[in-house]
Image 1 (tube, rainbow, N blue to C red):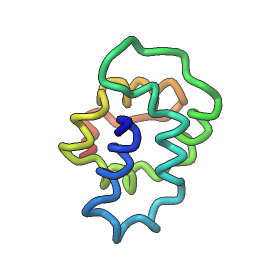
Image 2: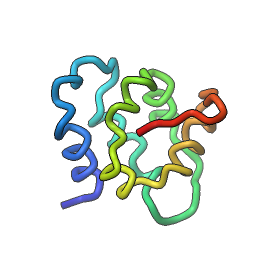
Image 3: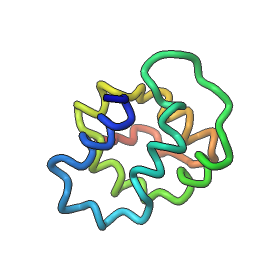
Image 4: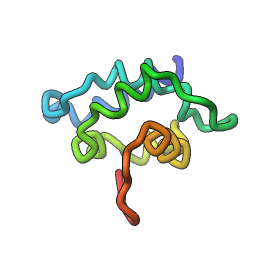
Length: 97
């Protein structure tokens, strides 16, 4: 199973009740930005489509989906890189997951 599909499944399992609470589509987030947060490889230039998805996120809502299993599939340092590259301001000490 592709890593992004595993991520989508993991994000939905146990959090199905909150699915409708987030404004953006998790599958769209995964399809547009997944390649930039993979565990291995260098940080790369982001697509406009990824930043469009990132800037529309409800961050506190999305943080509910960051579980230890999700953290095994994505590189959280790259997640921060992507967020900052798209212009999001992350509060020092912010915890997600």
